[in-house]
Length: 315
Image (cartoon, rainbow, N blue to C red; front, side, top):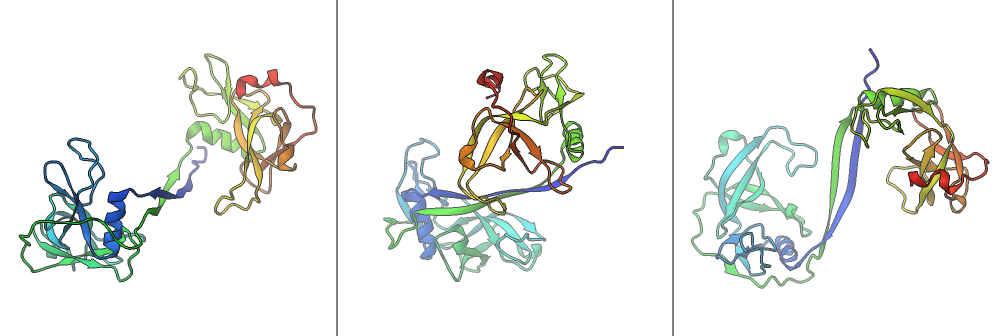
């Protein structure tokens, strides 16, 4: 049985967005221990606020302050918190309808166990000791013995000193990648310093790297064929921003390379040449380092440049 390949992969990036007047007021209010909602055309108070009426789709900016106390409308117990979750001890995910609001806010409830949580229980906000203008300024909710406040939400102009105008949220996805039969065969060949593709039985095109199916015809591909190792730079870009965790100095070049015998260009880094000397049509070859399963980069071969007509269909 062939080796089943797997690899842990992480995709992460900082997601940056600017805030409009409603979200700016909401997050700045949290920093100041004030919870704001927004009033819709039919008079409902939405917390957290939205920028457009969910019924009429019209822009809404009529802000109102609600109480820091509320009622649990539903909940789920989390017995094993993960590293980036709000509390390190077991807690309940809760939807809380704050007094004066007509919708529920998702957050966490600090409770000794699931026996202490119930739908309809009264809770209040426990503010974070240090607040920056984020939803985490609500440290969590905690049980509260008081009655529901009958006073309706109070109008608020949303004005605060030093308002929060933008946020940066880290986005991260951790998963295990399994390449499948076609890609596993391709990776096994790369470990032997060979580059292979698969030929479509219908259009006869060779696709590298293979995916087990022809992207043009949609039919399965099983016929392996060796390509390259030399190829032609069809197009490229100069990278000037250093990737986190990458040991490559900028600027460097990332290119689409049409390997000899392939009908689909793959992308790889170009090395062994100053970035400003890379050009379309340049002939290159792979460079393996150590026991890596794939080439570290491609370098110029010294051959004459390929004619444009030889690779124009692979741009």
